[in-house]
Image (spheres, rainbow, N blue to C red):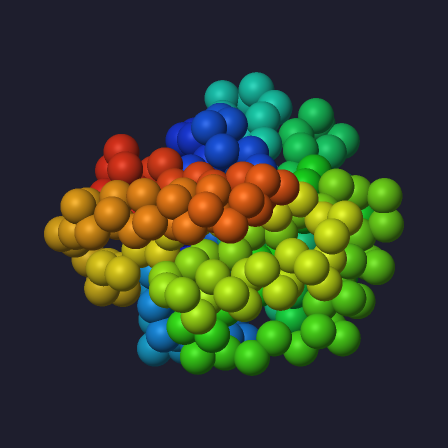
Length: 237
């Protein structure tokens, strides 16, 4: 059985390599990280375990089909860290019906089903998160992806994160890299529509653009969190 914090959509993917793409989100419950600025604690902290549904892969797929009206689209596996659970059966069920699956994970747990994703988004957490990346585990995730497309996404809050991101880009020069400014006003876990400092986020986005261009770092893509710009911290979109 899968532990599912929420299933919602269709909406658009708000960040990274498939930004703007119509998507149904399957948010897994549980995570092996506790990032200081986590914006999805309701899907991370075991304190909220009682809100997670135990669902079979078939049940999850039935809900995805209901939400999408049976029309195949992209299903995004998120969390928490979806890689700590086995989504192989769900992916097989969905792909047989024409759905594609993307997954975002910090790269701490490798799974064979990474090879069936389109794409695998690896999001190593920078120093501001308070977590330390296990690069051997991260490399194992890349190896597990096989022929699947793999991209990186790094959230940047400050100069330390920025320098760290440049080092990561140098370490993995063949992986496309997306940078995004961090949301420094994450919602409380049980908030349905929390306030957000939009001006602060946009100032950080402008700072990040200026910083990369001044450094002539032209191989990176710099994107906002589109869903935050449209819906703020509202959940389920």
